[in-house]
Image: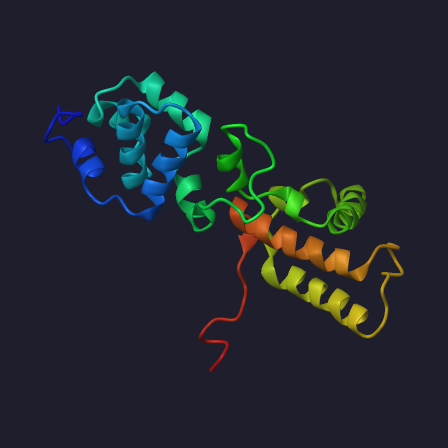
Length: 204
């Protein structure tokens, strides 16, 4: 077993220059609460091996699986921390409270930064669509990229030419365009998007 011994990989990660993100993460953890050597060892391994299963982390760091799971549940997954590393600094205005979890939560995507009006009006479009076609119909049936590209384009051009509200739905053309983009994103993520965008042959 290559656990947390003197020559083990976890100890080597701690001794190396771990990189700004890892150093900042460990420093923040140490500042906010007492961090044990075992926690530092596990977190350093997780950062370096972001896709490692819990069993592997526990084995390599000489801890039990429950300890690894508890650490991940408390401060977020390594993927989340790595992805959000560009904002891994204290914001200019400081944190809104002194809760130890706040610095980690503040680095994750926040719906509070999104305009409520836009979400509400897009929700109205989705509700109309649910009544007409069924809720989340694009997750049940395949959808073509061009269908929603064309629909979004029609709504955007209508808005650009001065028509703010779609006469059929009574909702903003911009909200309709947003809904089209949301469907493309979600269908693509769910594997239900037929990608019929232009390819090399179409451009010849």
